[in-house]
Length: 112
Image 1: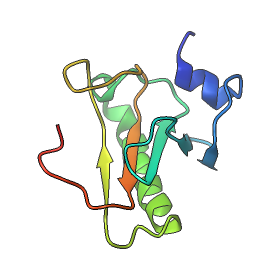
Image 2: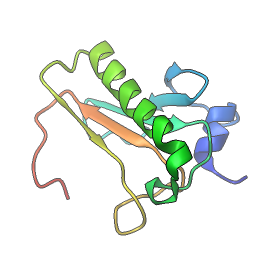
Image 3: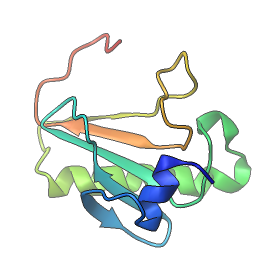
């Protein structure tokens, strides 16, 4: 498979890992948009949120639980933002489901 996130998970492309368990891998974004900008990805290759099915419901919840855990570990007690971009019009640039965790500064609205 020619998926950059699958290669990062496999260790063939280096990353700054911040968390790993049997379902997920989290690492620092190489082009951060906030002082804390982490990506939380499932180890299972799922192209996007639009591609999930009912069997993936617990996994999507787990990604958010890990985002919450990492927010606490990175002292984002004043708040943080999670983002899942879906499809080209949604801003998705890597076709592997992932959650952006952003924090460490005031977020603005609307975001895009």
